[in-house]
Image (cartoon, rainbow, N blue to C red; front, top):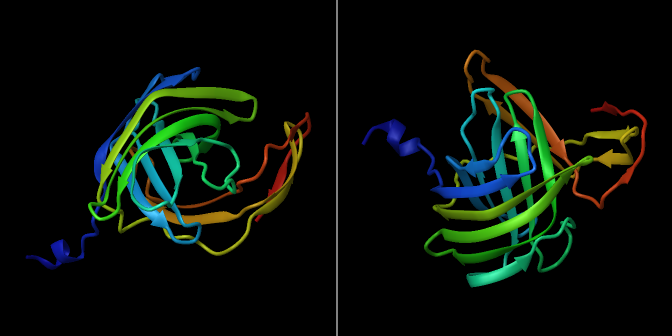
Amino acid sequence: MSSSNKTKPKATSGTASAIVNDDEDFNSFEGTRFYFYLDEQTNRWYISGASDEDHLGQYQYISLWLPNEGDVVKKTYAIVDDHGAQGKANASWTKATSSSFRPYTAISGSVTVTLNSTLQTVESSFEFAAQSGSKTVSLTQGEMKLQGFTEDKKARASGLVACNLSESINERYESNETGFNKRGETGSFPAYLQAWSRQFTSKPDLAVSRSKCNT
């Protein structure tokens, strides 16, 4: 066995699909890259799938956060927008390119899960409605079947992104999750470093103004 085979991290395999409603660019989702691991900081399972890029360089993410209740069989969880709600699940659908990332946070829905930590398998069926600003999409007939814990999951970066938001949203933004990743070459776009942050909080007030951020 070569040294490269010995050091290669284990990847999560599987399938994922869904119908995407009310979006101008996508009407369906098919996953080709996957994550499946237990987030030790939040004690929640994270499963997600990402699609390949389309002809415009756009791709999609579907992410699900599930309560860690041990192994479960066909357990149904309500999907809510509060990431602190006990016994509830959270979800998001994201449109992205090599230089942009727009998540739609699920505001309602449900997910039915069968998870076996010994076999490192999870099967889920889901549907949810999600919002980003004034836009709303819904995902129906969603399915995700994954095997193998992800060993090369994204490392969390320490730090904080904070700013005052105004215009379409009036709110103080202070990130509670940050990341710093290396992205590979995509088409004519060279390899690059990506820094990102997000905040899980209650839905902010909507208004008409402008936003400025400082890192």
